[in-house]
Image 1 (spheres, rainbow, N blue to C red):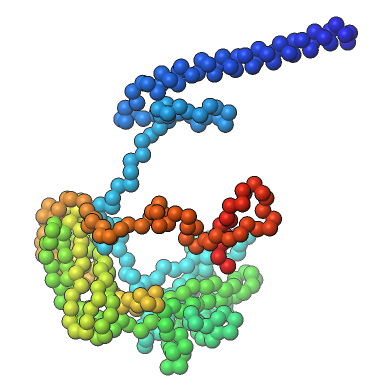
Image 2 (tube, rainbow, N blue to C red):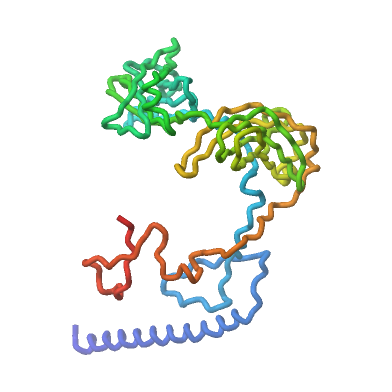
Length: 392
């Protein structure tokens, strides 16, 4: 290539660069009045919001008043009080949900172990009962050998126990049931809050031994019981059912219940309430919020189902569940329109409200974290700021 051609190429490149830079400046100048005009224009109507495509990283920052996005409404207050919620399907709180685990991880659809405690809540002297079935891909139960279950308390360790073992027995249709009735000493070793259980068996098809874990509640019953005496009233547009209780030792007690239609099939609402009670007969009021009943549109009578009394132990963070009563009570024949359609209005907060933005909280680390010195390997780009480190 001759010197003249090379010089012409260099001049052309310089001219191209100059033109590109000048065009970029012109486009920036052209954009400015557009942005200014947009900021002076009225905002788009809320009924027809639009979202601009996400800008590229090289785009200039949007000017105030030019952003167009879907307006986000502030968090709406809950329409129902904390102790009363709509319900689509109720369940006995004393029952457990069966586990369903694949046996062969290479072929998870082939064989499954379906197992679990028959009841999640057991009180002495009732036995601990566990069910087991091995099913194939077609859902057919198959035989299994060496099936057993063992139990330990939450105070025991997996390595040292003590564990208490019971065999599974085939009922004749490859449904296996293990029943363990603890002796007095075994009961003392297991009783508490939760009992951990381990189901083991020799997997079909020569797949080898398998073991699966689960848990159940094994507690003394609450020191009180539902006495079967119920009251009802419409108060402030809501249905309030009083659950009668007889308390044997003063403490904190809670009642939960589900409200159903007259056919006992259509769930409407769930309610719960905790109160401190002395020894003797008393009542725990359950509020089934009026708006829930009104919106459900089902006329009474209503049926109270899955009622259970708990004794709470806030100091230990545990509770002792009682026995489920189902059905428990049938109300009068109310009409859905007898109840208030108004949403829940929370009572005014009394006293100061402290949030992360409160002056007293400024400069404090987030919860579960502490301020510590920067690690020795941290770069100087941190500017010497404290590092947030998880507590040890």
